Amino acid sequence: MAQLLDSYTVSVNDIVVDINITQDIEDPVPSYLINITSVTDTTKVILEKIRQEFISRLDNQSLEKAEETQGTTAIRRHFEEEIRKLIKQYFPEADEHKQSMLVNYLVEENLGLGKIEILLKDPNLEEIVINNASEPVWVYHRKHAWLKTNIKLVNEARIRHYSMQIGREVGKEITSLSPLMDAHLNTGDRVNATLAPISSKGNTITIRKFADDPWTITKFLKEGTISFSAAALIWLGIQNELSMLIAGGTGSGKTSMLNVLANFFPPNQRIVSIEDTRELVLPKTLHWVPMETRLPNPEGKGEITMLDLLVNSLRMRPDRILVGEIRRKREAEVLLEAIHTGHSVYGTIHANDAEEVIMRLTNPPIDIPKPMISSLGMVIVQNRNRRTGKRRTLQIAEVLGTGDPNVLLQLDMYNDMLFKVRESESVMEKLRLYTGMNAQQLAEDLEYRIRVLKWLVANGKEDVHEIGVVMSKFYRGTLNLEEGGQ
Image (cartoon, rainbow, N blue to C red):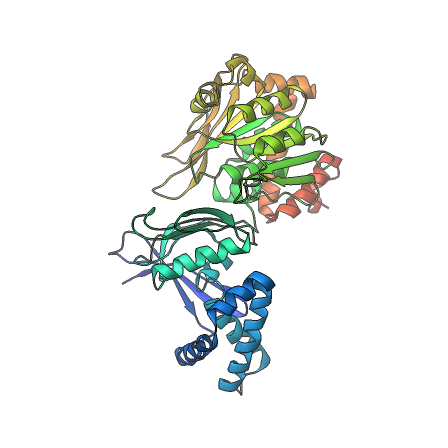
């Protein structure tokens, strides 16, 4: 007997889809089950007949030629018109809303990504993975981690077709000669595709979803990702322009934490972000210029690298620079130079703890002299427990004048809480210098920030733009917690 873990609905182009997450005692992982309740089994049989009739009319060569000359949007409109005629013929009693829903159902099955479109519309999913046509599609759920779905692709050709379709939309191609593809959907979702035999079990597609509803400090606090006192310390550091690096493994929440840090930026400063693929969503109250790298075209021309954008950003009078990921020596050098010339810098790096961050920065391929690293204010390390799926802030460390890390707060995994490891030698001294406050005044300031953070959670201020408004009032000195922050 399967246990129901979670249940909710998703609307996809007027089609209501029930999502049930269940755990069977015999299954090693929970199941993610979709059920299209607004389309009955009888209706599905008729729709399949319509689909077959529609496909029989298609001339694939003419279709490909039309796609090249008119684009996918025009083709989609043509499909909708033709399918609508067939729907009216088979469902003469259906009203306009019902007809539109059935048209959308058939269009997505034939022209879109089929049932993958349902997964793309579920805001709770972070990753969608097609391993091959023999296995079900897998998803990574914000709350339940990896889940096995009840969706399977009919054959390897369908997976290849989806890959080529995604590529065409953005001017990329995936072929037997070029069997690897990095691309993105129009929604901003990042896509990686591989073709067999490079992936030996079959063709694969991995979609990392763009977060329309991004992680915010309120969500982090509610989920227990970070403590109120740790968040307050980071906030005070950001207000006083300490530069920070966020470290962690793949999927640990580095970019989510980078997005959370941006919640604390003052609205009167110019912010430039540099990413390989747009993932950050900053409050509308901020003066923000997002920039993206670009891969070379098939002729090897037109590439814009992260270093190109970094060097260019320094000519844009930024107060703060956000960098998606630091990988190379020149990028790290430019960033550290930016800190030395008065900019605040925030970026991510692959490393599992604060000590490893320093090791990565001071050894090849990055190989930065250790004394240069002392310009960094703080290192925040994120961790994902692969057994429970929980993401947590593992460590918060300062960087000493020698370039060595000094861990201030560390996660007690067993009790699931951050605890104090050592007293600060660097950060609190810098904060006293920048604020003019003594130790007692800094402690009172941190307590007030904790009150603000608790107020955000208590009042359900989870939206990134709502938080931006609250922070704007905080920095103007007009935030009144007793009157609902008005």
